[in-house]
Length: 193
Image 1: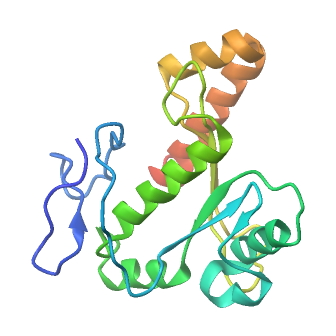
Image 2: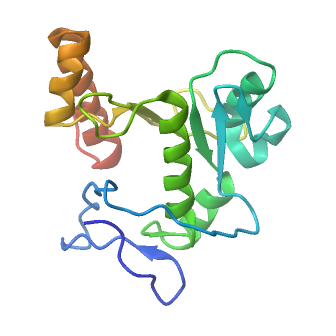
Image 3: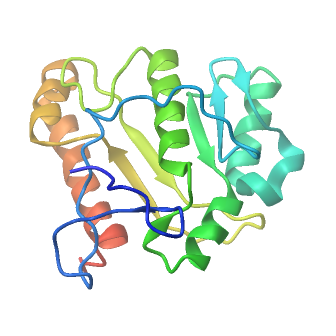
């Protein structure tokens, strides 16, 4: 589980033990240590919400329309749930690397962003008692309605859904889990409905 050592190009390879034609399986981040003393020339992840913003509306080319607008709403004091945006530069580099390698430092920066979101929300990804659920949304500098995919409720699994059901009711929890599995299967694994 998790990310393997860096490849010769200096980017992370996700080894799945599966046929290379198959999409990578879900990774377990619970045991990944937080990086310390990380230095990056250009931020790859911008955190927003809970009164914090690392971007603004002028940064559409770097953060995409959704990311820039969420940062701007946070900047002007609107109540925005905490989150983070991975830059469009990372997407371009990922595409350049053949859509299988993460650019150097992205995984670590995303983990730092996730830990910051967990701290702001008082919730934890994968924790049945205090589950953090994420919405993963793609975005571009220019809006393209209906063209960009979304995965809602990332963080639900067989254990977390039981904790969510205890807090919010079984109907809500299991419908949320159903929606997550449907979106993940369609968007990430390319399965038809």
